[in-house]
Image (cartoon, rainbow, N blue to C red; front, side, top):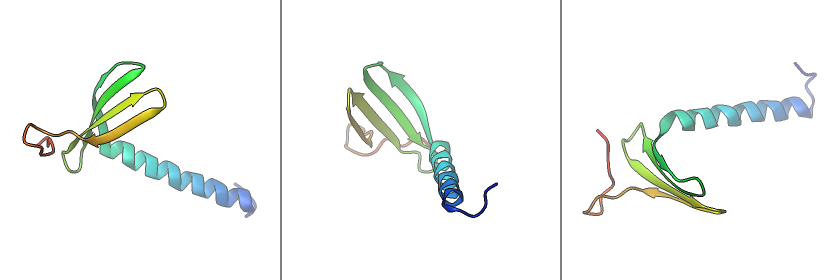
Length: 77
């Protein structure tokens, strides 16, 4: 517990950011992973059912919806 100084405001801000991160992590679940340096993961949005592909290689990364053969997003019921 602080004395109302600037650090207390900063700690409150950190708490809000942590809660937002937890909410995001509760929404998105990793359902597949392969690789260690050249990483491919599939993430599921538990609210919409849409699956996303995450690819990372070194410092480069990308995150995009996983598409079926017709170009439509893959949705888990």
